[in-house]
Image 1 (cartoon, rainbow, N blue to C red):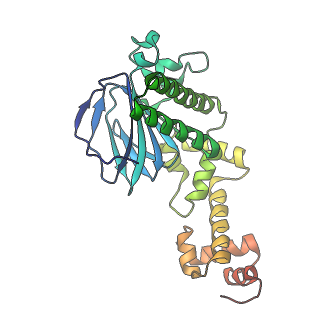
Image 2 (image 1 turned 90 degrees about the horizontal axis):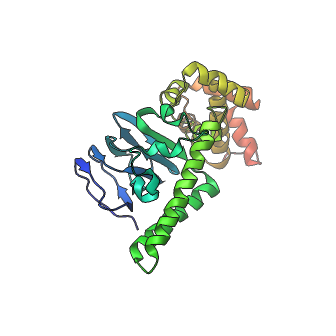
Image 3 (image 1 turned 90 degrees about the vertical axis):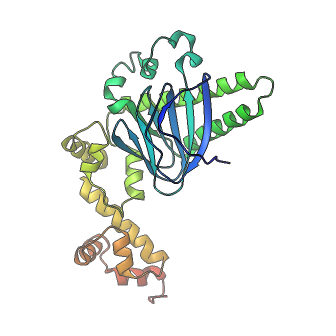
Length: 290
């Protein structure tokens, strides 16, 4: 069960080596800083984290990594449920107690340039499918052990926290070693939000790459340019809505991100060889609208 709470503006300190909380908020949190590392995992909902003045959108399955002394606030888009994993580096490893920087954990030959890639000392990674289930189970397990305070709970909690961090750093490593900035996570996001206003320019703003670089990489990864891919997603969504619902064609084209009715009909016919109405009648199997 998630807690509800009211944050206060200011600097937060961590009185022990680590702590994990599970929260649910609906209102914006005030700007604050903290003297510890923070991992914020989104269980449910959407929102925006404002880190050192930069807005970073998050959704279910996203984890944002916040370094020491970041200025941070959260803007939920409705009800937002998330876990806060807070720790000091000297709790994880005594050998790191004087580093003063969470990203020093990654200073190996695989992560040598990691910190320079992080804009405003923050990083977002996404857990999908079985990865997400496993990650959420570890968080819930840690919360249960933390609440029980039974014999060995402290050791158990620390061990699970280490597992959580290993999964996080593996995801970071995969992200850095990925040749293409375009990946399946991004395509999944486009598929889910194709009815909204999505542009390559907006994606570039929230990545480490220029719009022109993303344009080239997108075509190399998908075999088509961004606009064509987005239009294909929208037509695919329209086909599903036409076949599965009785909503009006006008509602469907608006829901799929088309502001121009003529353009929608033209693209739909190019992709399917049918008008939207004919496609709906054919997909029903009896040639009649329900």
